[in-house]
Length: 504
Figure 1 (tube, rainbow, N blue to C red):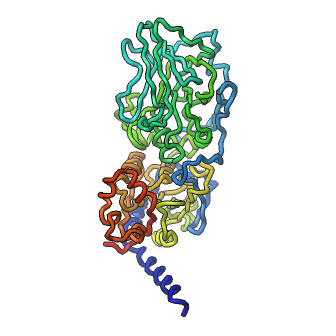
Figure 2: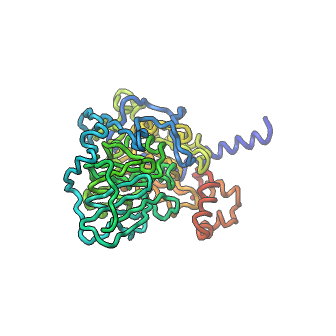
Figure 3: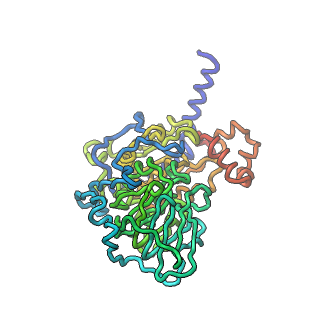
């Protein structure tokens, strides 16, 4: 008969299998409705991916588990050159959002044609940016970011983290600002860049190189190393600030993180065709006709189209831009795994299950896989702890109709999904207040469907740890009133999830 302990364990297993048939089933039914005759319509994956069943695991890295950079991301990246200058990022084969065939483009020659001229040859006339008479060059009014826009004669001095503006005409009073050069100016450790206007009594620093394109000076650091912050704090703001220049802009990076440049090289290649400069290590005095210091940002992982007057960008634009950067096919191309109409089993909608490594884990993953299978999904399991090739992972996400996971940075990979795909968002107990802002609204803004499943106290391991009468379980609002640190400590760090479908 076996030991009582073993028998009890078997009973518990049967209970959990039985529990998988109610509230969570409602979520799956919602997801099935999403796919009833309406699979995701956006670009499909390349044919190199075949069907993956629930028994296979294809890992994916999720930076939410660690702030340590992963050096294994592949791709050609800017490498440090002489005098702190990075060598050019080779431009890969590009695919337009309209689905045209890619064209080969040559990498721009360095320090020769187009990118920069000698100090003796002077600047080519630049007409995009016109100096504003009497207007201040820096705007510190936004709660999220500070930004300076220098039109005319701007000189970037890397070693001193300074940009000198030479206004015309010169005045007797110079101005100076220290600008946190990233989108979260409230973080005290964001690297600051000094912006100065030259006074009539001062001598302008001599240019060692003159450039014909504009430049953007921005900082890494901050919370980078977590993929949600990589995208929300840097990549979306950089898209907002740089995309208007159609790749004819130079990026000067302070507080550089080489792993970041390497990991997101495909995106940087789509934003600039010029060298990426390590500003802190640069010995040059670089002169530009237009310099922006700082990055524009509207909200967490979001874009306000009314605040982008040049192009009226949206998060759909950003998602399509990212897909294009990673060479994901254009609309109208079917997902290869369903292309074979003679094999009905390959017509199932495909669900990617994002697995977490340390916190907010799904304790009963086998039961969840069983439930997904019962409702007709083919499952691709993605392990955030082990995947290291972002370009390969982007293609894998693109091959899926939906993504599911517990609230965490790994869900940021929804940027690789196609239009009309679904994000099944499992929200841990006690963090409902932040769920929509982090992933719900961004998913909808990207043109995705957001299916939310809120975990109850019976589905949280906090119940076993603290007991039903503890404030952590009984009154999350009271705990929340103690500040974000307490919410992070308890509900984000101490909690795992067991999907319990017996609650009413």
